[in-house]
Picture 1: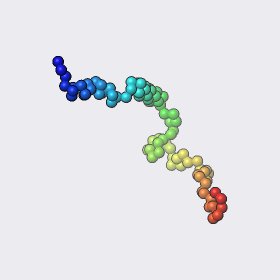
Picture 2: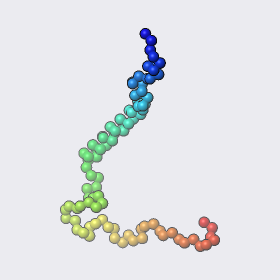
Picture 3: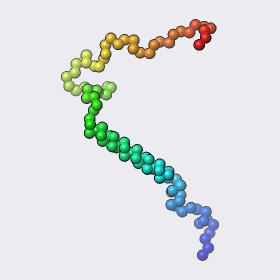
Picture 4: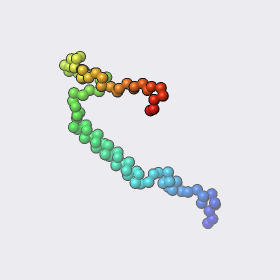
Length: 93
């Protein structure tokens, strides 16, 4: 039986698929990352919040907190970044 040259030049489907997929070690590593992520999420859900009084920014509050109890540490003025100093003309940088 003779085969045409077109049949020999086209690789079988299995070879074409294996060329497109990453190596088995890469797939195994990604599967390991997914499993570890799921385990850490499950452990975090089982343990609960680390700081129960901590609320997300802009979230609604429930309970008896007063408006003055907003987490502000009054008296901490000037804790931001310092303003840049002007450089005199001709001064070395």
